[in-house]
Image (cartoon, rainbow, N blue to C red; front, side):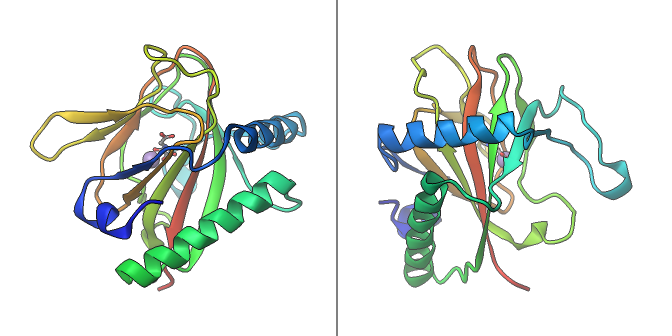
Length: 195
Ligand code: OGA
Ligand code: MN
């Protein structure tokens, strides 16, 4: 399990097999059903009146995990609740709420370098970012890495392997999603504080 100390002291924390492959499969199915119900929308950038789609910057489509939830989504929320409680008791982060969406990138699409705290209302409440990968097809060379930029220059890549959870402190952490050879499916989440 991701130790709070690792998350606090290093750039990011990675936990493999946060989900089993059968749990991943169930979430892939849930995402596909939501997609067939028309719940995925092209992600937009900007804020308020300037909100717009720019697939050169951000190419995913997203779907918030809202009611009614599939059983696999309920189970995932329970697992994230345990993580929230552990982060609070080990690192006093005061995390209060979780927002969670699926993100699907068509082959070749990406998300340019960014931080997860745009200027919109409540985004400054994000404290911990989560990325959970649902790519059962993934093999070395297939791309789709999560790229973390280092303050001294250079970067570190994390492969989007099925069942892997990546966790990082949201504030100021610059990262990007690299293009993949196949559709790239993940769940992005943020633990928020109240202010
Ligand atoms: C995001 C994001 C990373 C990933 O949704 O803001 O940066 O690896 N996702 O999917
Ligand atoms: Mn991000």
